[in-house]
Image (cartoon, rainbow, N blue to C red; front, side, top):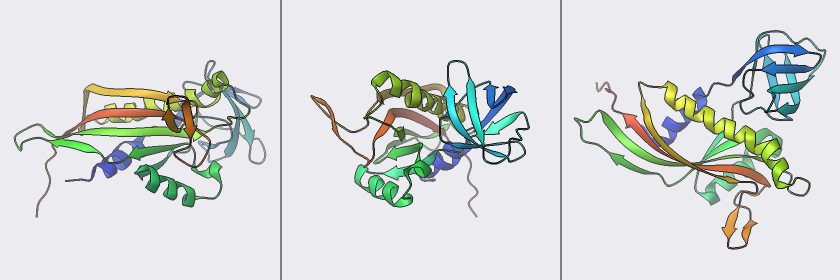
Length: 230
């Protein structure tokens, strides 16, 4: 029996399609099929491994503005986004791990946090399904609460996180040998300021940083696979 955290990390997060198809480029702007979770400040590479820093993203027009990390030499039909970081644990444990991961916050966002504990229901041996796992994930990225109003936060951060959620779900749907996704059930809640909620709103951070997030709960049905028992 495989631990659910490794199923989520290795079979879903690590297999998210981070490649973005480029339709055209003029000067330092590229038009793409889907911006996915691209956002300003992150480094991407083209098909020849040339690196660029994203200076702006327009999710409405699918236009990404790039700054070359060196001489401008864009080439190829795709760019590759950095994979989101993955953390798992209770709020206290995850906060400690996230803080110690890197001193520079820019190197650890965006990230996906799998919140523990996880409840699972296991089926009988003759069932086509091994288990159903009730998973809670939070998709998170940095924010600028002092300068950004709510609509700006939606534009600059939440849209890329919504896209990340969609591509996480696409990763589940594409693995038909492992996951049952025809009736995939999930719920989302967005947080322009991610933290502890009170009747007055959000009054303190859960992770010690100014973050924006989308809280997602998924009922994940996992198929029974034959295991080699020597």
